[in-house]
Image (tube, rainbow, N blue to C red; front, side):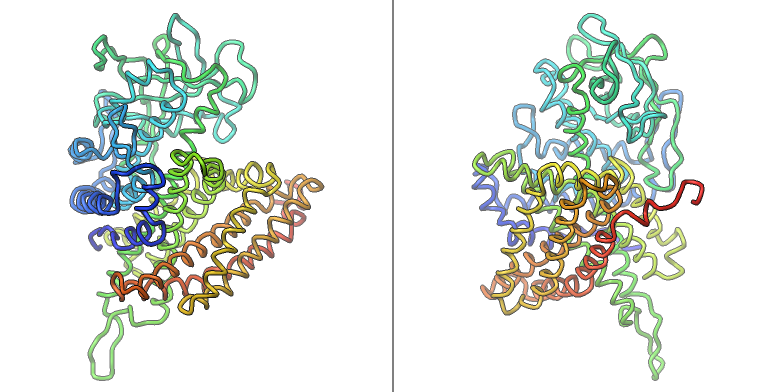
Length: 590
């Protein structure tokens, strides 16, 4: 198994050449942030990921976590790694300065987070969830709660979690039964939550749970859910962890992958009720939690990229080293010479580079939504449109890339000792948690398309059309225009089919949503690669950068256009087929 190496050249290329990082920072008013600073940050992140986190990945997968009388014990080496991680300031990278953060752009934070998830996804889930908790508190918590909890969460001294799911309330949060009873300036929380990632551990001195629960007399359904902050230890007068709260992990799930990330069943109120504090207004908990969930959904998409990158690196190294062919003179040569292996490697390379470019393009829109007031409304709409695509398409592509990594290894890939099976197992959760990809697809089709008459999607498609014009006028990139134009036409047809048919066919959107999501994912990936190719051509013409790297970028973009963009036509065929055969059978006929 190859050592993890941060793909800094590709990340810096997207930041500098595709996104124009320096110009972006100027537009956002972040005058002290530059591409030079970003490169230094990424170099340090790559070093920590490769030297500290990546070596713990196999250990965590093998050893897992344990539930003891004192609580959950993390995998060997994780506590020491987390201490170094937080002490080095990585938890505070993008948080506001008012709470101890470094206020760096979100797009740089996204680039850095890829390192953590590629090096050790189980470990990286802990700070991922803490960042989501920070987002929720920043947007919705009272100033007193912010002052007490945010500095410690931002520093990484404390960790955060998200407690939504219950035994009878998974995707259907309207069925949440956990209760919150008022008691003075706080509430007594009781109930059980399941599938809580990093719900308990000893790496931090406190764990802060954000919990959905119902107040007495709350309306039925999602309109009756409120959000509460429930600390593992109640802060004392000095703000330090004091009395143990009435919340505990009572069991751990035994999972297919991410073995070193404890997935907990959390029990609140076994001894009278856990003390919690209301976040936001009563009955507005779902809206508050969506702030955290939307952050997590883009982060999970990034996990798809990261685990695909890790699998691609292992497959590439194995293909270069594995001697399988024999020449007439008896000399041997590695399997990377075989066309079918090249096909798989090119598919992995093109997919991963498209995923990275798209993830960073989407992340930059979040920066524009937060900082650029003149463009904020457009950028926020684009963020909302991108979120289900990033979560859904990137995580589905991760299934394919990690599976191909096993295939490149042949029989050795099916053996745990080579390590690539671990990536496949770890990746399988990604289309499921933080809202299944079916839920993401329905969100994309319903809230993000039908609800606004397709206006958000039309704006994106028009921007892709502009890129098409640029391709046609660039001799190095003109060959990409045809495949991208066909994919764009497929997206326009799918959009119109939804707008024309959804009102008359109540199950149409649900029947075709996933294929619409995947169609738009491939299209956006192709657009990202087209923008990358244009940037590479510009750099080559200017004599800037490494010519070999830039030429490879052009070839990879062409492979994507020739071999992955055509999938949009098949997806369109399925979308246009509608719902009839999908819904035709009675339940008993399945």
